[in-house]
Length: 246
Image (cartoon, rainbow, N blue to C red):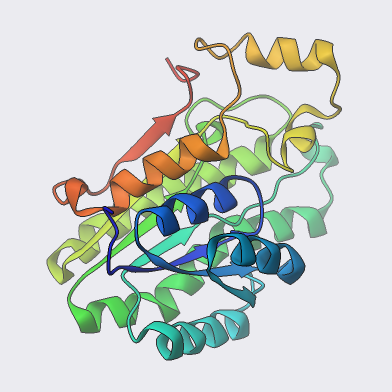
């Protein structure tokens, strides 16, 4: 029960890595609010793990303001924020990505972290404590070709994590990131372009441990970094990638 008595928000918690983080957090004693644009998915996961679902578009300030109000009403205080929600574009040359798609990727993957700083961080500063975990990617460390703007958004998130950690440390707030390698999530096919045994084998061949990551892998890493066991860890971007970035 490493998170006993803690409260947490997990964005994009209705599927994939986010759902794995929700499952682990609840198992470790946290009360969790799932913020997801797909409220049906959030509701399903919330029902499985006794969490609270809320429809949230992380690219919109009004959604974050509503989330902050809902979290304060439900919990009184937010101890943990997991910025997990993210999207990508299909593999293609950088110049072929449409402008509106580029804008959407940066809004969901990068601007959302800024909006969380505007709405949730003040609550943590007032409390004098808190933990933020940003779900970045190996793409921000060792980028694959034809995913340029997704890679760039995750590189941005890693830098933002380190900057946030330095600025918020005197306020009693820790900020870390995890860098997953591709896993069995709804985004996998988007990363690969198409899902065939041959493409899967080629993708997995770049991961020394020889498998995709799982939601459980992310839940375990997130739980450690957000627990008091990691009280001396801030500003890290921990690769949970089976050796992909070596």
